Length: 439
Image (tube, rainbow, N blue to C red; front, side, top):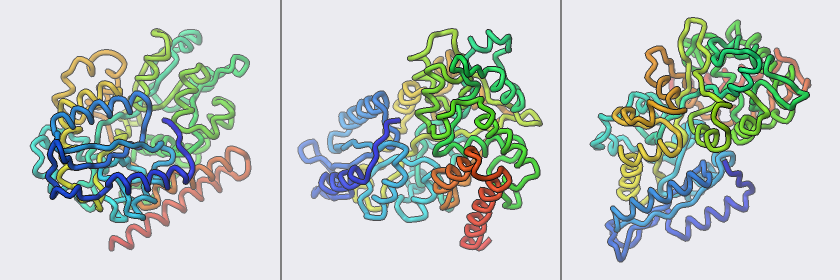
């Protein structure tokens, strides 16, 4: 994902959107014509050259079908998108349509920056054709839809099958203990090879929380009593084992700062033999790696044999609560989320579509993505939700947990202190939420 940094970009983007008509009536009563089209702005928050080209193609098709609407495209790098979208929300300059993920969804919805889409969803003629994951993905706030997921990805393990063969290992990993053991066995610093592609930067704690959820058989970050899973008896040993990957040298030293882009590159360039990532990585893997050197396998099972998996949406579509072009904005989302467009979008992004019927396409029963599609259909799959309803979630995964974990990895504090700090943060956030909700 391309990085765009600095507040200069934020200010420029805000001014640009103000000038180009974000949430601005076109003067034609909201009903555009070919000669006097309604103008809506759309902001993508996970741009890449391939994705940007695809989205512009889809926008062109939308404009051809709807000559009375003109879509102005812009983008912001994912790593910076939360701060920039929140800043734009506070200043009332959000684009008409933009992408949100679950790390920012609740913060934006609770702040009043997102439009309630429930009435649009209720009238949508495609809603009964959607897979169940659409309902389960946290795109609802207080029971109403505020965003429409674009596609799903799940987690799976990308492995260097040629490394496995050299070590005489079967290319499958059934348990988490096996995952950590293989990470050790595949490591050979003399060759610059390490077992695990580790993410020590923003969002890295999410993988630990998902591992802990699987280990404790809990489908979320909190148990049924509202207690963080970081308070479970197994949590401390799990913390040491998970982060022992880095402490014991089974991951590159520089990976303490790796984010999404770097950890994927670490697998592509031959630094790491196992990568826990989403389906979108299939595209660069197939492009940059030789066939026969890699394989995609399901993530390890829980102690009871269940697949605890996060099925995240990369970029759910939302409408600004300040938009004055609601009809045109929803029409754009409807088009982008139509069965035909969603299938094309999913196939070209290496992702899982939102429609049940789409899985009959041979693309999802053949090739690299087959393993992901099979996991989606697995009756033993358990969806692990983040604590998306907490306003503090973005701070937790983006900055707080990063600082705490890095202090531990750099031997500045103990595992006990680090885990306690993480747990205290989550407990206080949960208590605040329950107090505000009157629970």
